[in-house]
Image (tube, rainbow, N blue to C red; front, side, top):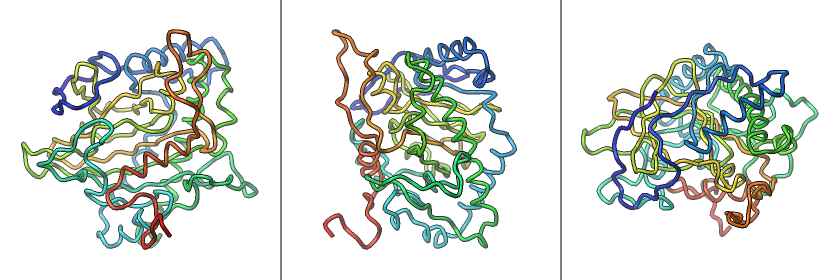
Length: 362
């Protein structure tokens, strides 16, 4: 269901993870089974994928194809807007990294993983519209609920295009957000079993989860042979990502031989990949695998990643059962929001988390 497409072109790219040639497909039909043994069996299957690859497809995930289709249609309508209209919701107007990121607005290389290519633009060949957690996108919240204290400048309101420009855009996107959020919470219970914890271990940490959902648009490459990354080689920051991708193949996953393994779209599936926080929690037994997007198809590509993390005030500490005398903790305890904000502050060109017109010295 996937194939090796090329070897890593950057000799400085820090290889990690394990050797794999394919990405497994996992059936989630037992995700909500009343039989705990069936849930444990699912957890064992997911554990294998997390420790050997860090990526897996999911089918029978519960989000309707009709809703996914409508969300893609909403994304097309947003990115078809004039640049001036999109820039009205520029994420540089926000303190919490929400809104529109234009073409070349994100770094095309990650200094933690690879050196920048001097002969290519510093920005990535993609544009994005980002939203974060809001109460109206959570099926478990009602009129009396309020957001918790914001210690890291990551909570608050989303920016939205005017309803008259894209009727129904906000409603459609928040409906998808809410469905993905419920799927993510259910997966957290299976991940808890996979990590040898009680099934409800993470429940208190996902009441107001640190979530970002993105609509991404990747134009075709302008010049063959001078490829610009749609998104640079990177790992994700939170616990895991749920990715919807359209029919255009572009996602590539790096194995420890330095080979980029294609993760092509498979109808009826989503992709899940482990992110840094879960890797730290598991003492790096779960693999936060390097990946990138390279749209060489000659067609436009759209995707909708849903980055799921715990409440930003949660403390991430390596689980005791993942530590031994020969395998000490890989990282000191830290706050989830502290790590996410630090990573986001380095991701964009000309924006580090301060609204336009303000500086961190103000």
